[in-house]
Image 1 (cartoon, rainbow, N blue to C red):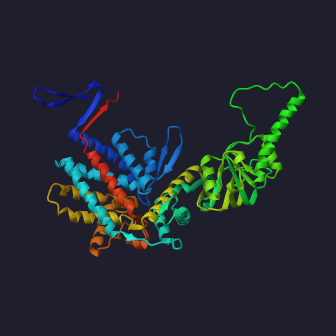
Image 2: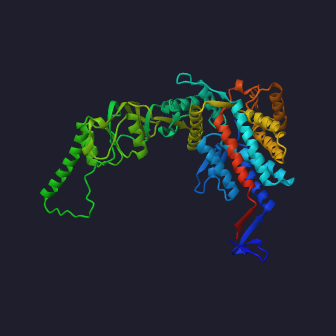
Image 3: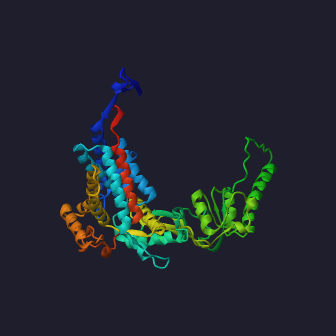
Length: 535
């Protein structure tokens, strides 16, 4: 593309290979962009809330994913359109930052685009709409802080955290066990949380799944679970007060870096070679025994000879353990990862109260549990379920719950769920619109209407009459001046979200509004789309 000027100094654009490109300009470009943004939002709209539907996605290589998580649906979808990709990135950034509310943020952006389209048809300039949206999002942001409640909790009183995690899990496929899963998530987060610094490192929580059993068998282990078994079937299956040597060097004879050839022409030479090798293994195993290790965990494989020796010397061992797992084991047991046998010292051993191998069902599947560790800062959530898809979806649901618990530890303010926060913001934004004299007033009102899209979608997905339900709740909020009235999705009989215990984190809601507004402003500012043609 090049810029040139005609004889009057007016700029014009020269496009290379113009016949091979398609170009949309002005209002057409904005409408096309809005249409593609709305299309993505429409897909996710039905999966919002506790009665939301799941989506089934098949990848090109035949893997099937069934999920309710907005970020996952959009990640797996094969999106070509650039504006639709923006929506995918929008839900991804909500997922990275907050972890929850990935569906709501896209539905919100779709509603804002829909309202913008009406304003564009009235002839309002897109920049004025964007500015109005910016003002309105600020009003909503401040109003959320105004209606938020501080949630007091401590290491002993964790009920508030559990209630909030249950709200997150209620919209997932696992909602029949939401109480037990929420408890597991909260206990896991509190086990690794640094309450003074208000910080949680979620990498220390390992989520492991195994097909079989039922969802109720999901458990939290204060330690590490490794999907491996002992290297020799006759090694002891249970070790108490284990001292663990964590090695990243293989139990194998040293291999020279260069190519070499050994000529063996007599039996004696062969015997010496074999004895030399055996002595090498002997030294290795002896070094481990000398420092007092009662269990060896190794990143690499063992020679059969070494395995046999370890068995005879009563030194249980686990081989082929991945690097990430090794690090977690080292954190949990307080050990050091040792790269060479010469560096093994008693101080570098990790300690665990109990190491046991557990078999599952009638299969040969075995896992090693390392429990009662010296430093229980690393925990494992072990999920059971009927099939692989169920386990994957449970992992995603638990990730959301873990993120919610982490956000509450960082900032313990909450707003009430069920669309009550959105309705309250909508009323506040609507009231503030009259104070602005310019064209922005229309955009601010449109923003208030767009905020109603989330409670409307909740009502629709719950099989209620959307418009009737929303207007009833809205008038109740204004009449009673009660910002806790929301949509009664589960048909409990009360609109008060305090009684239903439906909470959401304040920072999650604020982030939703800010991110959705930013993306919509960006889409509205595009007035020229030049793309390669399809053929």
